[in-house]
Amino acid sequence: MPPSWVWPRLVAAALVNTACASRRPCRDTSQYGQTAKFLEMHRGLVGTFIEFGCANGIKNSNTHMLECLGWHGVCIEPVDTITSRAHGLKGAVCEPGRESVAIVVANKDGLHGVRPNLNPFGALATNVKTVKCHDLGVIREQHGMNNVTYMTVDTEGNESDLLEAYMPLDWVTWLQVECNTVRECVRVRGVLMHSFKIVHFFPFDNRRGGGDILFRRRFD
Image (cartoon, rainbow, N blue to C red; front, side):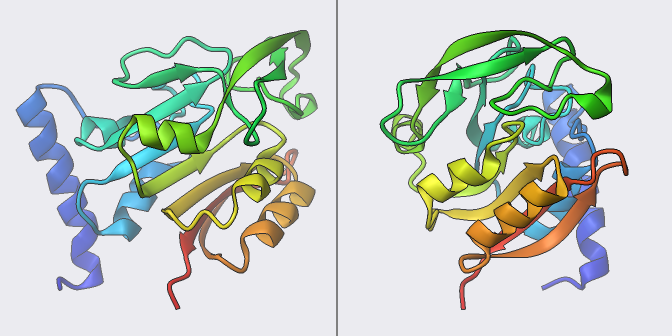
């Protein structure tokens, strides 16, 4: 196996080669470099992904670059229009058995959610929209994903509730979770601590106090 310092160069080379082959750049569009960091740590072959809350599918998406690199997966978004993605679902991932959920729509993109934290961004709620619920088991079956290499969860407020509803998530290897407050980060860690370990943290600015946490399944 190549030494650790080689992997970032291999990832960069793969991006260049893929971009040349497809005649389009495979760039990391995630907000804090989450995708590039995940690829650096993953060090594996092309895999599968599920992304909750992918906005328009490009800006701030944690999986846009993966799809460009040949990964297979699906992104789900309740409000914004998904563009340039092979498999985009309108609606929200919900607890099993639920048919619809109320989403608070904000006046700024990427902040719509069940319990969004709008104040730090100077954003306001404009209305509440009821959207269709999607079950993770159904999504996996429809898209042929028995196992998911990378799942990223950004629902603006109810991440820990959703994760708890689907535990033990033994079909996921890497799990990226946004938590908008310190309290929600603690709850997410509490839900996942017995099955997943934290491998990286992407802090938000001080006004928010939360961050994006990258977990990896415990295999020991």
